[in-house]
Image (cartoon, rainbow, N blue to C red; front, side):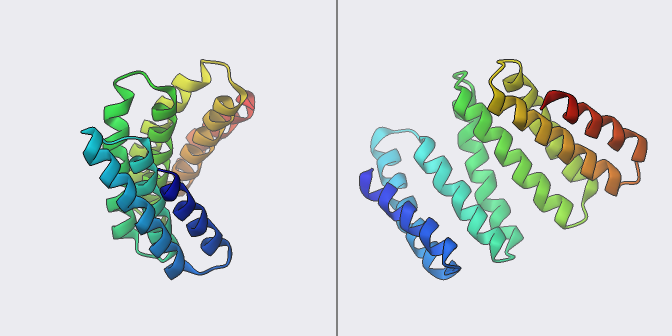
Length: 171
């Protein structure tokens, strides 16, 4: 696992240096280790989920939205299993996945799909905000704003204002 973490850190460093291809190589190596560890344990864990999510981020940065969507969906599938245990981190990871999928849909002009993903993210972020942690409350505000963005793009100005205002009340 330590080697996987080191590869991931090198991948993030490559991204900072704008070396997308290098980042993809490092993240791929980290992902393979996570896959191997998950296979040995008999279940996918958060390391593999994060690796899939990170691959989605790199693909999105490359403009490969279909590939990014594939990786985000793989990450989401692992989150869905982990959420069943009530794991708060898994709930937040799932909320982030929905947000990324919503962002892809919004970029592609598929506003109804973006709205659907953002609503899914909002439900999870509301659940976490109820815990009272400031980070989760901020996530809820971000979810409100994202939903406002897609509603604005859809021409639903009044509803967008409602969600923007709601987000302001949480932060």
